[in-house]
Length: 349
Image (cartoon, rainbow, N blue to C red; front, side, top):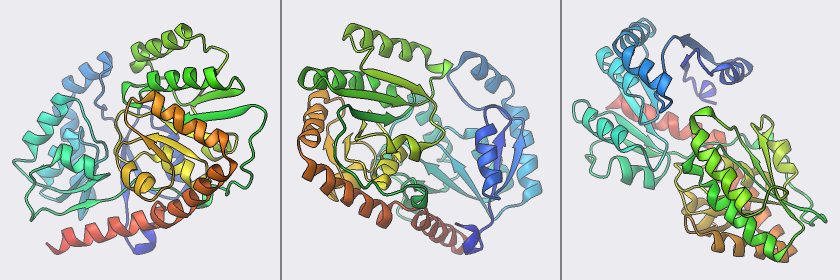
């Protein structure tokens, strides 16, 4: 979309775990460059490698950025210290994209330390992200709130809000404490007590780095005797197809910046039940595109699901409004326009 506005983008990505993203960039004719850099992760092997190779990779990244000589360097994620330092050494304008509302305390401290020496402009995924990361930022600093976008044309509009004999409730997520799948399991248990014709699905990757948390979730499923009620589908490559099989979408995240999975569910027109994270309070709560509960409130989430199960009119009303809200506010075209405005403000300053 930015290409259509005469903004050229080149993405720098690591070799490791980037094949899917690389194919997506190729498909959309976006320039990219692969470089041998290590991502920051709590996986012990890669964390040691990240620390050991830090200055060498900083040199490689800085060399590449100087060669590309961009007008703006856009850093995606509060933990991208290496990218920030490499950009600083280029003396180029920097936008730092903060796309979550919570972070590891060490990461947050390093982030706060670095921006004292060179203040970039910021894009925040939600007001909660701004308050968490940069609550006292100077009024002179350019800060723009931009939600995660959805390619609306990828989603057919849901037409039938009748429930099948087997009601399917699902989420798109990965296994991590951030997604609070323990609450998801507790919701499934509450619903099972009321309606036994409900099946729950989790569409999302199970990563080695989150093995301990995955075991906690599996233990909770076994404890509540839900092995036949919850299906683990693994990584979902075709999200629109997956959503078309659901009757109700649920999001139990403990924190988010701008929850793409929820926006995608809205775009398809699913009745959405979600926790109040990121910019949910506005796009879902205030605009009445779904039913919102407190973080960790499995009983509140369950009650909202039951409301949708019991009322065809409610499912259809919220489903159609969800499509309207997604088309108006959450589309990728609007997101690109806001990025372009932010970039222009930076260049004019």
